[in-house]
Image (tube, rainbow, N blue to C red):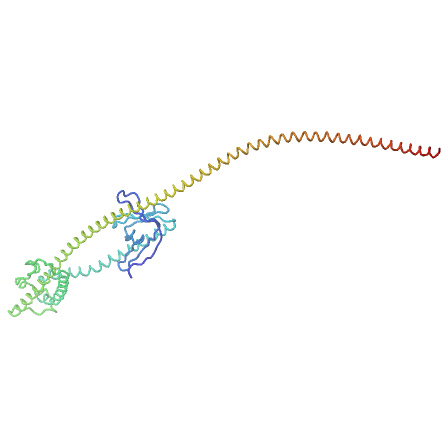
Length: 397
């Protein structure tokens, strides 16, 4: 199935500055997706984050790692394999707490997986070590046993030889060009494994169980038979010893090759880390250059806006000067209007006085006219009486 994402969140990614080991260097311009992946084949957990097609985080969770919260929205952890420290800035404290909780959970899962793997390796290595020890004890103690006991173990020796020859064939198929040195002990057996006729003659037949051993006769036929059995056993012993020695030599050589491969892998890993650091520094320089260009563009746009604002303010100042000049002329006109208004008020006051005087004169004229009319009426009445009296006098005369 490969790796599957099991938890994802978004955060700003930072790396520790490889030069100062103090300052944080941003590796993403904006918040990116940070995910936990589980590899079911290798049984490991990894933290991976991509910025486009570039992997800015590729960290395997191990039991020795520790995630530290340095603030309410920022956390960090050290990766010894990548030789760096990763930092994550979250948008909220809740996201930071959730990421830290998952980190602790997967760290514990990695620890359990490592323990299970070690237990399996111990269970796998224990039976093979037990068989090797048993085979060594058997080969070492053969000279202490009677010929019949040695003969009873030929079948077991053949089985061990089959196992050793199978291991040897596997070793030769894996690395046939590796040759192990042959010693006299590997051909004839060691001093403890070498059984001499004197030892065979001095063996006590009474040490064997009576129910499984036939009476030992010292006839020449039986002696030749046991000598043939002994020679066969020595040949098997020599083959097994040679196979074990060759296996041991191959294992030692393989261990040396493995150590050399590990050193080479470590050297290549350091080289890759150095190249990644150089690449990260180049990327950081490119990022800084891009950021500076953006900052310059922002400053230029801000400067252009400020210049436009200055022009607008200049126009407003000119318009305010025009308005101030207009205000001065209007103030002067207002003063003139106020003076003229005062004059008009004086004239109006004179006219009011004249009107009042004229009204008084007219009223006096009316009064005089009324008096005159009254007098005129009296006179007319008197003239009428006089006319009537004259008419009467005329009539009478």
